Amino acid sequence: MKSIKYLTEQEVEKVLSSFWEEDPFYTRNKTIVVFALNTGLRVSELTGLNVGDVLNGRIKKELKVRKEVAKGKRERIIPLNEKAREAIRELLDFNEDSHYPQENNDPLFVSKQRKRISTRQVENIIRQLKNDSEIDVDMTPHTLRHSFATKIYNKTGNLRIVQVLLGHSSIKTTEIYLHVGREDLAKAVSLI
Image (cartoon, rainbow, N blue to C red; front, side):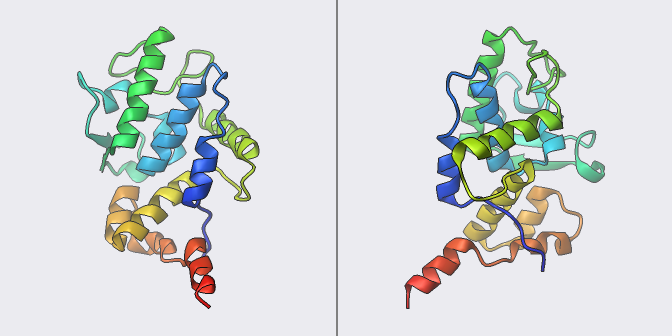
């Protein structure tokens, strides 16, 4: 079975505390990471989000991943927890303060050039964050997706929930999350 890269809780804390608050795009960059860690979106789905996907007068409780951005054109619904909703609230305030358009079809994540952020830009943000946090995991946007899925599986033990949330068409694809976690290995060894 293929090994996956994911972040432990301690690594997530280290990453989230590594943002440079003086960066003018601090809020946007942090929201990208927090939202990815709490929704499991692919980087292309994340960059394809529009304001209307998360806002309808107030922040939505569920995210409908539109078929236009979803892999395989498979729509899915992802409940938004409080961490994801708070990150979006902060991002919308940042976007308003930055005078970015906030109509339903406007991009949620905006670049320095005032356009939709690209997947390459998100990859660069994550790469820089990995270097700043000095974690030992090769962190990419997909690592954040794996971290979400691993956490969901560890909390529920239900592979089908992980499959639905990630938008996998086959449970076989989702079976990579049936791995033994690094924390579990350390805990087992500490028992002897």
